[in-house]
Image (cartoon, rainbow, N blue to C red):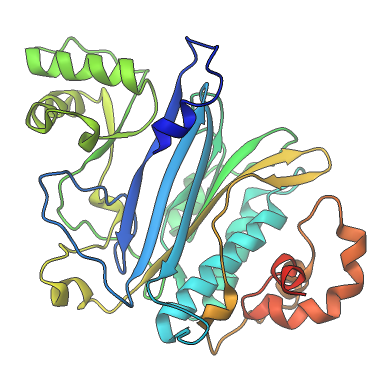
Length: 352
C-alpha cells in the first residue's frame, strides 16, 4: 500500500526514490516494538482486548515521516477499556502530547525526558528504559540529536544534551510500560535491518553479495524487513554475513519484551502492557508542526489516575496549535481537567 500510494506522486521525477522508510511493525500487548514476522512464520490471530501498536515510516526523496499508534481491539464508548491497559495508553498518549509542546526551538531534550518520567509515573507506569527519539534528516532516520526516555545512571552520563533549533525535524517516539519498563531479549529472529553507509567489506558469499546489492538498490539507507524479499530463504542466508561484518544494523529483540505469540496464554502471562505513540514534527519559526499522527479517542480509555504535576497540567491544557492559540486561551479552565486525565486541548475543542 505504501509503495502504491507514494508511486502516485512526483511521477515526472523518474530518478526520485520514494516508499518505505520503516517497515510496518505490529506489536501486541507486552511486545515493545519491531515485531515484523516473515511470511513463513506462524500467524498470530488478533483478538478482542489485545493492545496493538502499529509502527511505520514513509519517505519521498529521502525526506522521512514516521508514525506509530496504539489501540485496544473492540474498545468503544459502550465498552471502554479500564485497568492497566487504559493506564498505559493514557500515559503514553499524554507523554506524546507533552512532547509536542516541549520539542520547540530553545528547549532542551532533557526537558522532554523529565516530563515523560513524571507523566508516566502519575499513571503508575514507566517509560521503556533507554529508548531514543531521533532527529530526522534527508536519507537519515537516526540523526545525531536524540531524546532519551527513562535513562539509567550511565545513560544519563553518556547521553548528549541538545537544544532544539528552528527547521529541525524529529520523530518523537514514546513507549510506556505498565511494569518496570525494562526491555528483555525474547530470542526471536531479527527481521528488520538498516544499511550502515560508513561500513565497507568485501562479501565472500555470492548469496550475500546478491542480497546486499538488492538492499542498496531498493532501500538505500532506509530500514527494511526480510519479508520484502521474494526469496525469503536466500534473504535469510545473505543477511548473516552482512550483519556479521556490520554492513547492516539490526533492529532486534534487545528492545522487546515480547514472547512467542503461541500459545496465547504464554504470550499474555507476563501481565504487562506497552503502549506506543510516535509522530513526526517540524520545528517551524511560528511553532512545532506535527505532520503525522493516529486517531485517538480518549473517552475509550478510563483510568483512575491523572497527571499530578501542576506545571505539566498547565502544559497539557495549553494549545499546541500555531494559529489559534489566542482564541483557545479562554477555554483553558474547561481544558484543565480533561488534559490531566487523557484529553488535550485540541481533542476537547474537536468535541465541542
